[in-house]
Image (cartoon, rainbow, N blue to C red; front, side):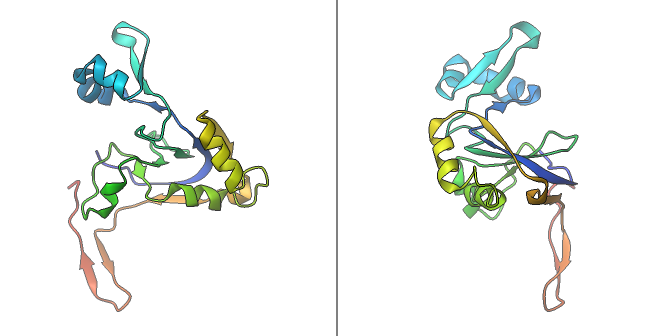
Amino acid sequence: NETPMLQSRIHSIVLNPPWNVPAGIAAKELFPKGAAYLARNNYKIIGTGAGRRLQQQPSPKSALGLYKFDFDNPYAVYLHDTPSQSTFSSFSRLASHGCVRLEKPGPLAQLLLRNDPNWQPDQIQDALGKGKTLRVQLQPQDQVQVYLLYWTAFASANGTMNFRGDPYG
């Protein structure tokens, strides 16, 4: 699915995030795989009937990995870790439902929290090791801008024009 173009600011980091699966993904991709698949992959069914929804419980193997970087936007997208690190060696990395997977979320979290004495690398690792979901608010001066943009034409440093295909038409 297409990642929307947007501008925002990262305001918090969620350690050990659960994944609240969007209804469309749950209905089309996950519920059809059956109860055994859902149980094996730590999905919890919340509610019953037409109102039921899925939540994948936090773990290093969950779709969001160990880190989620939140920023305000109307699309419910964010930056997150992924257990599928092999996808970063691929030229085409369009396997997404709209969010952006990060190759090195741990160093990004450490960078964003570098000025917070309560969240130095040892404290981050300790919290991750406990497996409990925690939201860490960034101080206003540590919040960083996020720009999600598509560049299908750009000039290289020497002025040569480069063109890329638009995967979303």
